[in-house]
Amino acid sequence: MNDGPGRCLVLAFALAAALLALRSDPPHPRPLPQLSFNASAFLGASFAEISQVPMSKARVYSDVNVLRPKEYWDYESLTLQWGEQDDYEVVRKVGRGKYSEVFEGVNVSNNERCIIKILKPVKKKKIKREIKILQNLCGGPNIVKLLDIVRDQHSKTPSLIFEFVNSTDFKVLYPTLTDYDIRYYIYELLKALDYCHSQGIMHRDVKPHNVMIDHELRKLRLIDWGLAEFYHPGKEYNVRVASRYFKGPELLVDLQDYDYSLDMWSLGCMFAGMIFRKEPFFYGHDNHDQLVKIAKVLGTDELNVYLNKYRLELDPQLDALVGRHSRKPWSKFINADNQHLVSPEAIDFLDKLLRYDHQDRLTAREAMAHPYFQQVRAAENSRMRTQ
Image 1 (cartoon, rainbow, N blue to C red):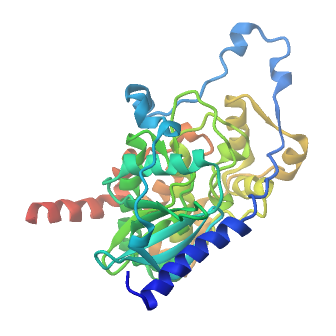
Image 2 (image 1 turned 45 degrees about the vertical axis):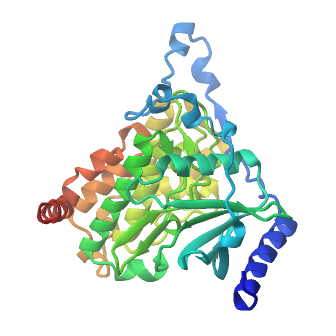
Image 3 (image 1 turned 90 degrees about the vertical axis):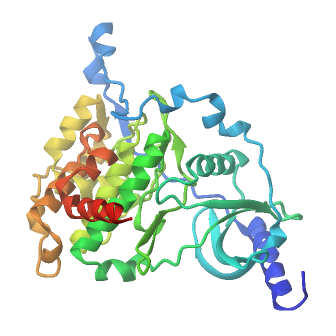
């Protein structure tokens, strides 16, 4: 490689990786939701009654990983094939997250722009999971493409190399979107979600920050698969996933056998924020308050129906915080600034996503067939006929 600016950028890349390895703090443990098992409901109950507690199972794609060979989902057995770190140069920092720092970069062998995600120190198992999932989903509609994996020779800090998306910050972009734009981009996001779900994978961190949009090219990519996981029916998962404002009620009430429908709640929160121009839509200050904010909109009667169905009981302290609230009609959120984005079909679509009971939510495939997207489907069909 030539000396000069390029060499400096390579050194900057290595230095950034080394600094990350040195200074990263372990993630702060978050308090677990205060819940208790509904013991009173079980006192005196027969074994037959107890065994009727419904095991929650995905309504769609539930057996995808059961039917696939073990190599497909057994990410711990993945052998990593490292590329050449010297093929990439850092250009500028574009973002940071809990588990990584993100840079715009360039592939010096072909001069193509890319995204370099330098991972903070984390268990190798987690890195392997993200890589395996990205490899399995490669080529899927609107899924960000993993191009390469490299690591620093000295610090051993791994970096993931992705396709470049010239995205606009959602805080800048969303207020400019038209009614049709929102329909179009939500439909594009649903394509990505239906695809990953059909491949037996839950994203578990759907939020505007993880949806890159190049508005000029009308291109959308679902990124950051670091919290994604393979779905196995009956398996109990960690509830400490997703970002607070987009956490489904199942996470907030400690229901662990959740499934793909978690992503549909997060999508619903995103959609509500977009059409009502209220970002985030559910603005909780902590996990307990997040459930309070949801209950103030969806009502506590409906929350109790959900808890009773899955034999869960809120801790008395959390129950007191949640209080008692009647359901708030969606029309209460319509105002002069957002009314051009809120149609009857938009409200119907939102109502079918933001349901306490994850089993009642639309699946991604069902969502794509909703009347809200009729215009988008018609335009897509017309485009395909003329190609």
